[in-house]
Figure 1 (spheres, rainbow, N blue to C red):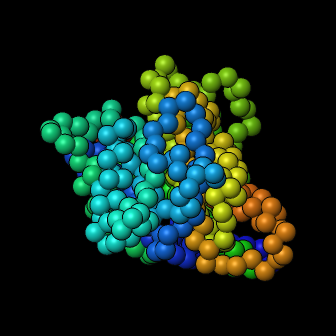
Figure 2: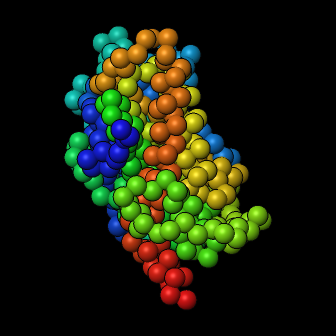
Length: 344
């Protein structure tokens, strides 16, 4: 008996997680917040040369803080880091956080992507809107289904030469282990094979979740892919950001290894990946709502098992996000680009 996608095929298939999104259509940007119902262990792995993050040092295995209250993913480049402040204040109002000498301090790590040059109105005046968007995303959070594509942190994203977006995917094993991912794709590289006829992630697709296109990459240019945006982009002007989560119980050390393995999913979905222009960042979080029945000595085996599944979920989530995205301004959708290529 093998596993299968969860009932929603989303990050919220992991018990104990809520997800909320907020967008500003005029701005062409948005925010996504992941809210564990109980404080949860979390770590992170950052790749590429242009990352933008907040509170990630606290997620090192040797750091004092052992759990987080939320994770924030945002557009807006460095301005988007303010979204975590909005989420932090929302949590503090509800007395959710770590107690420090009588004060409640929510722990909200964050990562951002660059969407400042997508044609949206970035003339926001005295204060960027991301703090408010962070609060709105928290208000919208639920354990139910959520839309993909032009939503949350993926609203204004690009993927190579086409519209990027926010995607998610999950996997449920027969013994009850659940692993899921959510990724906002804003990569320099392309998610489509040469000629724009299929997804690089196609071999990992489940139930035609991103179009069911047959994998077609018989002739691969081993140089720079024409479908990517490697025409002298600015450093830090791109990036894929996301999270993998599981219902298993792990500490930060194991979660760091899982986040590292999960980056292989980006390499399966995007070409090229982890460039000097990307700041690819993946968080890994454990809700500990499922207890492994194996001996504790098998922790390394469970870590490897979850990390492997997480990489597959990341690849699927990245493709799903781009496939679900609608055109935005001059950016065509993957659906339109693939249809044109197949009709040519």
